Image (tube, rainbow, N blue to C red; front, side):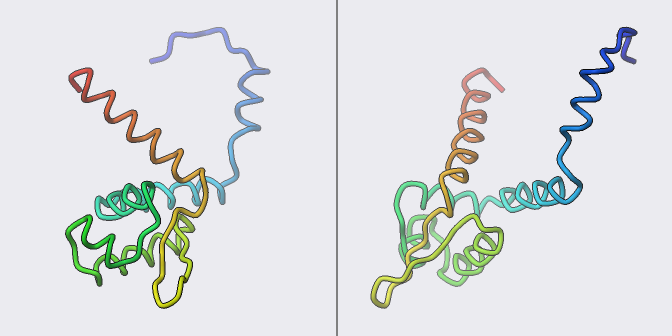
Length: 118
């Protein structure tokens, strides 16, 4: 039970007015759901390092190309990755720098937890 009896009504109203819309909250929850799969995390980590084709991603994460293609479709639908064609090859990259920042901050948080004995 919160024992704080002093309410700063102005502060609370500001927080309440700043809460994202229901649509934004839903989209944010969907984004985190996409991050909730270990295969997709491996793919994101891999293409954070270098733009790669499905074959190369499959080799790096030791999975079938069809599994990787399926997950890349999910990542594309969530607007986390994009594809570019070079000749006959299709290379995948992160959609923008925000995705890399989110990923790196989350990874940094996890690594810090491990360093501190979780």
